[in-house]
Length: 449
Image (tube, rainbow, N blue to C red):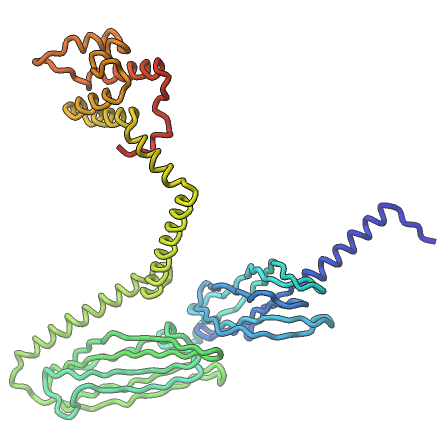
């Protein structure tokens, strides 16, 4: 027969409680990726799942996720159930796409989350901390033989162009604008490289300002980039505007694809008014400079990685929150009677002896004799003296040197407080001690005279 001591029973109880605690807090997390290595610009789908043997009593908030060296796009969250070790679990899975923008390896970070689920057999939600695992993603550089400046990873690309100006009657000094529009599927707009405009003999080139945008659904992402160039024809004769080749790497087919915008041949006619050529050229250079400055301003406004629009939104939200906190604190102070008490204390402090003495000392430190005299007499008026005069104050509380200085005062030689400031301080201390008043303390230092 097996006998159990008290020690054995305690150990069994602890093991039993630990087993119950594991069962009740058995919230699991999973992080999976669809690729372990990708090229620059190639997306990695990352799925972050949280699972519970019961259910979630509140929505699961995965929060904002930032991956250094990549653009991270949240797609959607899906509810699902799965069997883990023979046990049914309910879960929520968040799906992200991570787009590396350089050839440094990535780390999808570990997430610290709080979820709320009930214990098994109960219905009351309990907050529980969950920490997911980080995942490493290897990023490969642009393959040898490919131009890194034109590198683009996409599922598909559509290209269109438009022209402004009559290409059939171009003469010297005329301007023709060419606009190229690209719709790219499976990437973000920041990863679409700009069109490289080839130089042309006898033609000046002035790029226009580009525009980009990204569109996302719950299961797909696409981006667009529009940019253009203005051709200024400076010489007569036949000019060929070169073709534009758009290339991209298709990760599904594992090969490079391209689309080509055909070249244009233009017969440039002579223009008897060549004086206007310089005027047009100056105007285009001015416009081009403004576009460059605007682009620089846009880049400068990406404060903390935020665009101008996002920065303004966050700034407005911050101002609103600050205003609401101010209103709440004011309401709290009024409801508790603290605001009225604070105002009364401040009024009393502003009328106090120590406040006027600080004004006097400030004028002394500024070496302003006239204002110091005025401040000194205003301070004397705040003292509880039998006679509200400087002479009485000196005779009652001052030193022999102070009294002597007062007695030597005349119309020709008025009293100079700058010379007797230390005597005045000592007399004030004696006055405060004699009348049992509190000297200057930190309680009054918050007043700005």
